[in-house]
Image 1: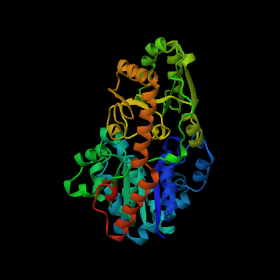
Image 2: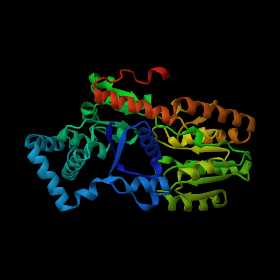
Image 3: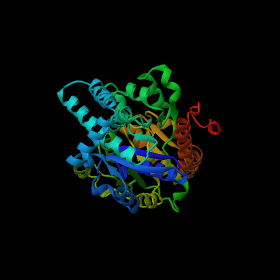
Image 4: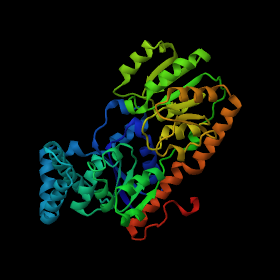
Length: 415
C-alpha cells in the first residue's frame, strides 16, 4: 500500500472542498493519504462533519514547529542524518529568496517548517508528497524534498502565482518536482512560459472535479433566482454584479441573488448593496457545507460568477452538475469548462452591461436555460468527475514512484 502526504497552506477550508474530494478518492483507490497543513484553519471553515473529521487527523506544521523540543529534535535528527543535505537545503532556501530582508526571513521560516515536515514524513513512512497551490506551502514541499529526498509533486492552479512567478520561483519548483498537475491547458501554458522546455513533459493536466451524483437538478424554475458562491474579495467582481443588478431588477422586479461565502470584503459589499437599493434583492448567507451548497443549488435558476481572475472554478462545476446554466467571465481556463451559448454565457470581465444582458438572456428563456443546464451537466460528467480525475492523479503518483510515469498530458482514454 502506497503512503502519500498531502500538503497545503490551510486544510481543510470551506473554499477548497475539491481538495477534500481528491483526498477521499485517492483513499478509495487504496492509497494511505496523510493530510498536512502549514496553518490550522479557523473554525469558520469547519462547516460540516467532513471538514471537522479531516481537521482532527491533519498534521499542522507550524503548530509542531512552534514547540521548541519538537523543533530542536527535528533539526538535530536532520543534521545527524546528513549535514550536507541540511546545509544544501538551507542554501536552496536562501538562493530562492525573491530579495529583501522580509522575504529572506520568510525563506528561513519555510526552511524551519520543511525540517519539521521532513521529520514527520520520515516517521510516518511517506513515499511521496503532493502539494496543492504553488505558493508558500509548495516552497516548503520543495525544501522538504531537498532535505529528505522524498519526491514531491504539486497541483498548479493560478491565477495569482502567475502574477508573481519570480517571487514564487515557479521555474525552480517545476524543475525539482517529479511532476506537476495543471488544472487546465491554460494553466499548463503559463507553467511552460516560466519553465525549461526540458521539463514540459512532466506537466500533466489533472482537472479539479466534483461528484456529479451528489447534485440534483432544480424541480422548478422561476426565472428570478441567481446564486453566487465564492470568497468575498475584490477578485470575484461582486461590485460589477451589483451594477448589473441595478438594471436587471427594473425588468425582473422579483430578481434575487443569494450569496454563499465570506471574506474580507463582506461588510463593504453588504453596505454597497444597501446603498444601491439592492438590500431586498440580495441575501448573504456566509460559508455553507458541501451538502448545504448542493441543496441550495436545487433552488436556483442559474449561477453567476463575475470574477476578474480564476483558474477553473469548482463552483461552476457544481452548478453545471446541478443542471444550472452559468454566467461567468471569459478568462483563463474558464472556456475549457463553459462553452458560451451551450452550457452558459461568457462575458468580458468588468463589463456590467454585458453581464446584465447575459443574465437576462438566461432568466427569460426557460427552455434554453434547461438545455444549457443539460449540456453543462454532461460536460462535467465526462471531463470533471473527481473519481476519474483522482484516478488519473493516482496513476501519475504511482507511475512516478515506480519509475514508469505516463507520458501523455491526459489519460489516453480521455484524450
